[in-house]
Length: 383
Ligand code: NAD
Ligand code: MG
Image (tube, rainbow, N blue to C red; front, top):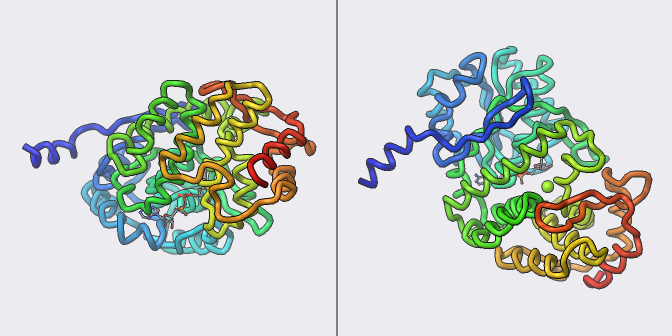
C-alpha cells in the first residue's frame, strides 16, 4: 500500500495559494516532489516550453536532476543552465552581467522563461536578470531554502547589492508561478532551516493568535524537519505575505502594508550589519532576536501585554535559535547599534521607525519611538 500511495502522490494536486495582483496574479504551489513534476505544472502558465535555469553550485547537484527530469517529461527544452557560486557575493553586478550574457548568448528570447532554482540569492539575482533581459522575460521561482519559500520568492522584489548597501538596485518583477517543493528542504543545513523559521515566526506574530499559537505548538517539530509542519508553515506564511503584498504591491504605504513585514528587522538589520555579512550571524538569526526586542519595546511602551516578549523569546529558544543579544558570542555597543538604526533605509527624517505589536495580529508602524527608550532597552539587554 505504501508504494501505491507514494505513486498516487504524483497525481494529487499540490496545495495552491493564489496571489491576487490583477493581471500579474499567480499561484504558489506547495508540496513535496514538485520539481519532478515541474514541466506539467509550468506548461499552462508559460508562453513556450523553453527555459533558462539559474542555480548555485550547492543546489545544482542536489536538486537540478529532478528539475531536468520534470521538465523533459513535458517536452521542455533547456536553453541554458547557469550555475553561480553560492552566497551573497553572487548577488551583484559582476555575476548579473555574466548571467545575462550567458542566457542571451545561448539564444534566450522573449518567450524563454527564467527559472530560479535556489535560495533567496538565486531568486533575487535571477529575478532581476529576468526583469531586465530583453526588457523582461517570464520568470519562475523554485525556492529551495525555507527563507526563500516563506519570504523572498513571494512578492516580486528582485535585485542585487552595491558595495554601498544591500538590495539598492532592483525591480518589481512578479513570477508566473512559484513551486515551493518542501522536499528540497531535507538537504538544507539545520542552521539555515532554523534561520528561515524566524521569518515564519514573524509571520505568525503578524498573522494573529491562530498561526502564532500553531508556531508555538509546532515550531520545534518543524525545525527538526517534520514534513507536514513544513508544508503548513510555508502555506500559512505565503498566505500572510501574499495578502500584505496584494494590498501594497510596491511598498508605497508608509503606515501599514509591506512595511509591517519589517517586524523585528530594524533591530535585526543593526545586529546583522554590526556582525558583517560574512555568515557569523545569519539574517534569520538576527531577525529572531529582533522579534524579541520589538516585543520588549512594545511592552515597555505599553502597547502589548508584559507576557508577550517572554513568549517570543521562549519560543525561539525552544526552536534552538539564539533568542537574545546575550546568546551571541560577542559584545555589542548600544551606540553602534543605534547608529546603524539611524542609517536604516526605513528610518525617515532621522527618527527611529519600528514595527510594534499590540498583540499577535496587531502590528503597526511607529515613527516616533524615543531614542532614549531604545537605548535603555539595549543597555538592559547587556549592550
Ligand atoms: P541563500 O540563497 O544564500 O541560501 C543559503 C545557502 O543554502 C546557500 O549556501 C545555498 O547554496 C544553500 N542552499 C539553498 N538551498 C539548499 C538546499 N535545498 N539544500 C542545501 N543547501 C541549499 O540564502 P537565503 O537565506 O535563501 O536568501 C537570502 C537572500 O534573500 C538575501 O540576499 C536577501 O536579501 C534575500 N531576500 C529577498 C527577499 C525578497 O523579497 N526578494 C526577501 C527576503 C530576503
Ligand atoms: Mg527578512
